[in-house]
Length: 255
Image (cartoon, rainbow, N blue to C red; front, side, top):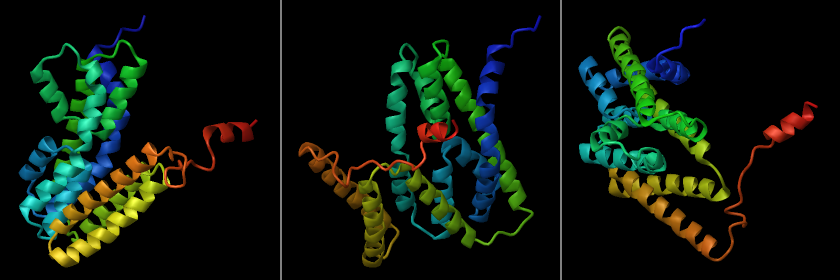
């Protein structure tokens, strides 16, 4: 008779694919942070305290560009603001937990472990807040370890700092593409790019990125709010963009 696995092992098996996926991108992030001037200790600390690939890539890029600290902090604030929404969607499953638990849970929340936990909470009645916290800590352990190893590897190789800008650009292009749901999103993305160029020229500082982000977000919100209030949800701008081949189409073609 097969011996039943302890709960921590079951949760580890569930989170293992996520943890393994962190290794290559974590190594790259560690190398880039080292190239930006972080030693292994600082890299470990920023991995533990920030725990966000997008934020850490952005920190490396903006430090290389000699951006002022207040600009970096403001950009980090707006970039990570999405976690308030992610966390609120999990709040219904956190009832009865202590404030200390909630602090630990919030501090180690990120996009990927949120997806795993949200799916488990929605489909598995036996999934508990403690299980969810374990998923977060397993992923944090793998991410921090990969960042640390990447930083140590960075001591042995020479990195062209131009790649930092390329890595961040590629990362944010990916994030934009994954969030495209309608034509309005595409329009506002291009508007944000144009406003960023104009603001950077006028302000002559990376603070222009913050101004452009706020303006584009405000304009996008106003347009969407106007269209919804006037019953134009199915108009051109809010028309949903769907892939040409859905699961239904693929399954039919395979029959």
